[in-house]
Amino acid sequence: MNTILEHMTGLDTLTDEVIAMDFLMNAKSGVRNYAMAVTECATPEIKQILLRQLGEAIDTHEKITNYMMQRGLYHPYHISEQIQLDLKNIQTAENIPS
Image 1: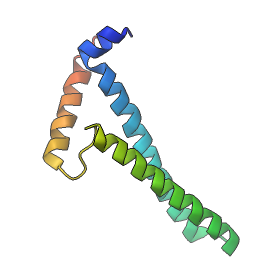
Image 2: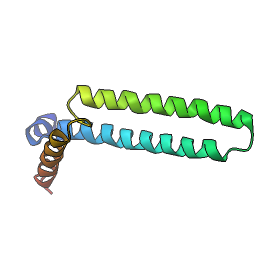
Image 3: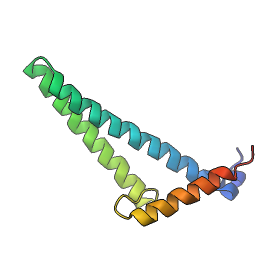
Image 4: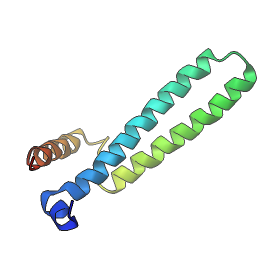
């Protein structure tokens, strides 16, 4: 889509937010999966590897969260602000020409 049209329709920030939120959800899923894997591993060596990976996944999740918070894309500590942002994004998505 044309950059000017993206800006006019709000899709420029929506795209960044959608990508960042998708990345955040995948990172969260990775943390959950590594945590479960740690409890199921067969050897101490594998457990150490998975714990290291879990730590990296948690660090990645934190970096994505901080990125989104700094850019006003995510308000995890201010629910009313997050709801308003979500409603705005829904309205933007509804106004996208089909």
